[in-house]
Image 1 (cartoon, rainbow, N blue to C red):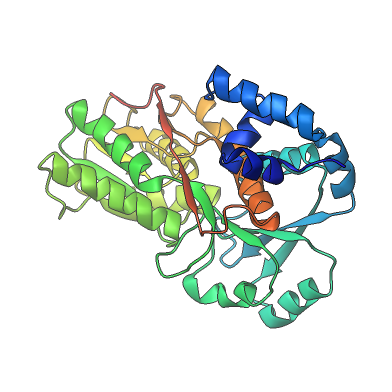
Image 2: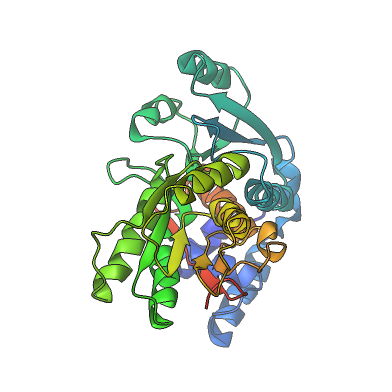
Length: 335
């Protein structure tokens, strides 16, 4: 009779995480511990994950994309790459992935009731456009679920997201270190938790560098390609007070700004520097190319699947918030 990894961990008085790392040949474990686990696995008849994959083949993970505003969650490379990470990790573990949309402007209770009638083993919920009042519908499902790309302090659930505060702080810090003292903010007028956290990071950096936080350089922008461009053109028509640099809530807004500035003969980066957030493919095709904060999008999706599988298998039952760090990608839009 074979033994599970969980049972093996209990027999060896080791954590499930340690045993899992050894069985999956991951680094970070001493050779002595690795030998103990592998010897015991052979003695107790532990079987590789191949048979587990076969057991999982008829199990389904539902990826639910919650659409509230429609201005943020769309068919962009950002969300397609997150989905790729989810799909790869589901396939790797033998689970089928189903994707569906839940629309805020339709009967949400009925849409959730439909989920109850489906044969679903776990749910990944894209919470990018969600608010705290949207969550209770899913908490009553009694199906394991993980929130992806969103987090709220008053909601007790598993969440996997990027560190927005850190990313915006580092982006603004990058501008400040290069001598910019008038740093504006191209602020999305759709206020989701991601953008609110980026706003916190932006102002945190201003305070650290003794730059006034009350200034006339905050511009509210619709975060869609064409409307962002029109919003920035409208701003430029007013002959506003002008900073030397802008931090933008995302690359869509930043790219639209570069386009608008070029039309108004404002040179980037000679007259105005711009830094974005997300590192979408468009960053390499703007003129100049866009300096931005890289988000590991596929890894974000894969981590969410890993956390959901832990929840589905009864491991690590405490609610966990996982934040992925971002990193600076230097290109040519900052002087």
